[in-house]
Length: 281
Image (cartoon, rainbow, N blue to C red; front, side):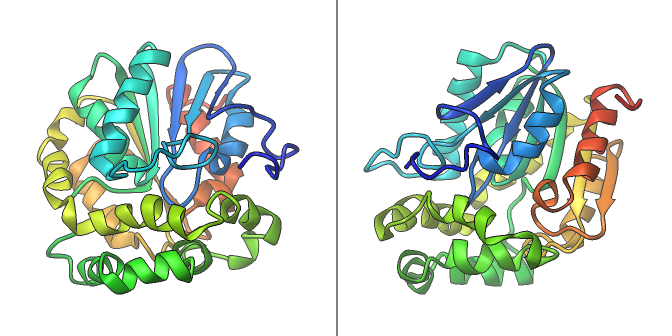
């Protein structure tokens, strides 16, 4: 899976990035992407921080074990073990998309390890009871959803570009870096679809995270939100405003679900200011 990686854009080897020195910043991707989505942020922060960006098992350049459940709970356990192995605290955790319910459990349990939290178009609550989100989740987790993921590559060919604020920013070259990681029906059905199915199946996991949100209240937090996100619209940002009432909120009006891909300069500026205690780098 590595022969066609764009090494000019992503000159990093292995199944996780570990660049720079200083206070650790851990960047956690979601689905159906991999650490490639953080390439602009890695380059910008590595001169000032130790930047770590893993690929979840099954994604990017990581191993893809057969028979694994690929549920958010399973990924969360793997992420915990990875951080315990490579990243001594205190660290800053930056999560996007499914990176939230995968990595935020660690932040909720370990305030000694995770000192600061950054949320980028992500969530940590059950979507059950939210009419629009629940309706989409039911389709994604159905037999039809599984077929669409496996045979039509729905996640990568429809959902990913559809969640951009400006689809032209998903160039063919960038899109190819995501498409090439899942070239076969088995990987799309075994790795990508379980996360779609989990949107309702793992409701108890998501709800438990939200019920524990007070554990984040004492730590500095930043929420960056692409306001044109069709997958996680601004109504989801409103949940963070109540759950993290002291967080700094940065709205990026021209971006969709991947603001760090679409408007990297604005995301980097917000991160740099936050990491520097409210002052520009």
